[in-house]
Length: 71
Image (cartoon, rainbow, N blue to C red; front, top):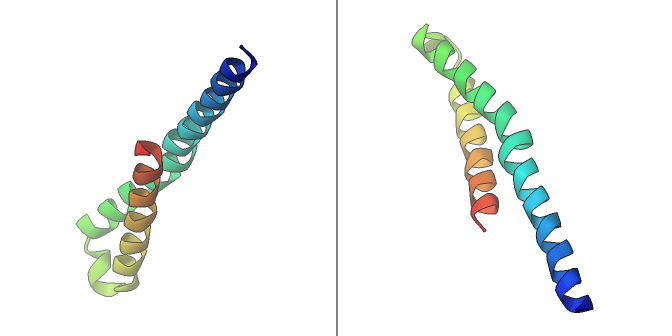
């Protein structure tokens, strides 16, 4: 019985971690990606090539978040 309660407590903690990762971390990443899209639509990426570096880094972070949440 105690081990079942421990397992349930651990599952709740894992669910909480997954929620934080998928919402709290993902929201600012999605905001940055949206801002980069707007900048690219306006042609800023042609004048500021570092925006592509930022996009790649943000995509790496996003991919890591997705991988962790799906685990």
